Length: 88
Ligand code: SF4
Image (cartoon, rainbow, N blue to C red):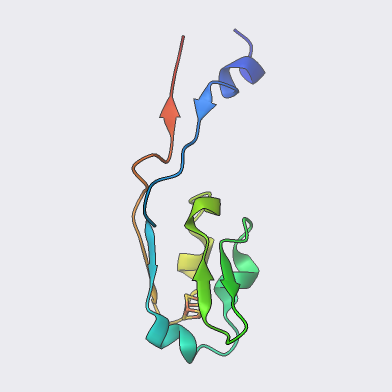
C-alpha cells in the first residue's frame, strides 16, 4: 500500500465535549489575544464583546495557543476521539 493510501486510513472524530478549557476571567483582560493569531485552525475567536469563543472541534492539537498564551489560561487534554487508526 502506498503512502497516500495509508494516510487516507487515518480517521478523525470530534468529541462530545471540549478538550480545551480557557479561564475567561483572564481572557477578558488579555489585550492582544495571541491565541487567535497563532492557531492555524481558527479554534479561538472573540465574540462581539471580546469574550473568547473556543471552537474545540476545529483544533488540530498543535499546541500553538498553549505556547502563545502569556497567562497560562488554557488547559488542554487530548480528545477522546482525536485520532484513531484503522489499518486494513
Ligand atoms: S492568549 Fe490566553 S489569556 Fe489571552 S485570550 Fe487567548 S487564552 Fe485567553
